Image 1: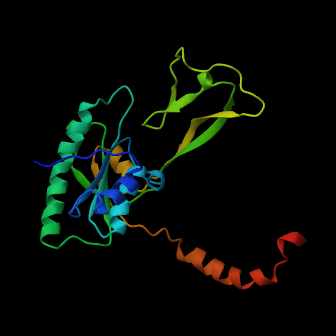
Image 2: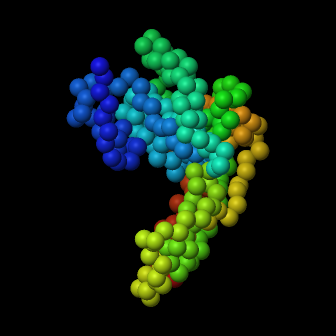
Length: 237
């Protein structure tokens, strides 16, 4: 009988601890991070703790995947997580076969996003990380009761009023701000993760860990850096 251990921490911390042999005598063959409530596509991959959990395993040369479910408020339900897990079993099984046969590529890990209508998904689709981004703004508020919470599908949701919420005005020494969705930056590339997810596919996106700028930026700063010593110091500006 296998034992399941529960501990608190960020996904990356949990992965690191699990692979350290402090809890388990052996290292896992495959690390699965998730299932996250809400998709992790495009630039949101950079923010994602779920993806970070898989990336941490990648740093340790352990095969890994991150899984996220595209939760939609007032449409999705908790049973969808069971369906999402079941839909990903063939991927996990195939990975374990490749790992056993030493065919798994060590230069990447996989980010998987499952569509909201998982029961009727269109199948698996290999995609690339896109550039979709939910743009956020901030609004100053007078009390916690005026705040809004961010739902898992990146929409604003009012915080229900509770008797224990402090509704007193803020003091001059304290400022309260509420985060709000201001808009979205879309990516129209046919093969990007977010577009394919919205079309109903389970997206499979190979990722790595190096965030390197394009060659044009490298060339620009190569010349730019040579002239830095000729610029005045900040005290002279």
